[in-house]
Image 1: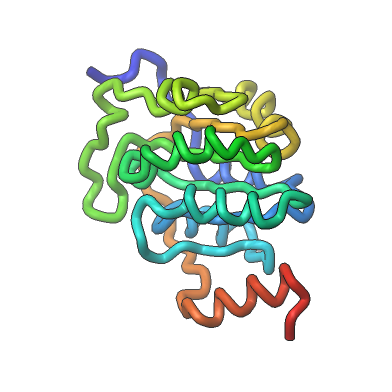
Image 2: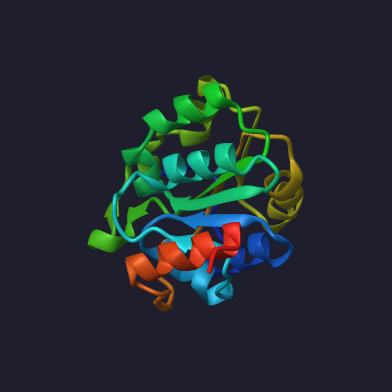
Length: 196
């Protein structure tokens, strides 16, 4: 059961648009393509790229949002990873961080393991799960016009915010962010806390 609406958006352009006006928002990316998309949009000291631990990007973002309530925290991840970590939606909703937004780039594929179909291809509605868990704002984006409406919600809406953006399944060129875990941790921490 494929989705009835036509999917036309390009993942790389979507992530670039979301991040274009982010200011000093902190970004946690899910493994694989969301990290490549964020790196292609431009590396930042405010970016932390998750390289392992499938399903951990949202819990990581939640912890950061709770620890840094004065900063906007964004998690950009994929549908496969979000399906792996669905329980985190309930925890986010219970904690209700007003500064936290989750963006799921949904290509309906497991991109890192060969492009197998995810459950969203068959009608599983992750935004409905986020709404049922208790997220304050939930949206699904199919068009550029809907994306433009969603960007202010993602960047400034009172959270927790959950936005799924449906994108075409074609892979984009891999743009690798730093892969040195200890270096990334030190870089992010030093930037955030001013430690040398």
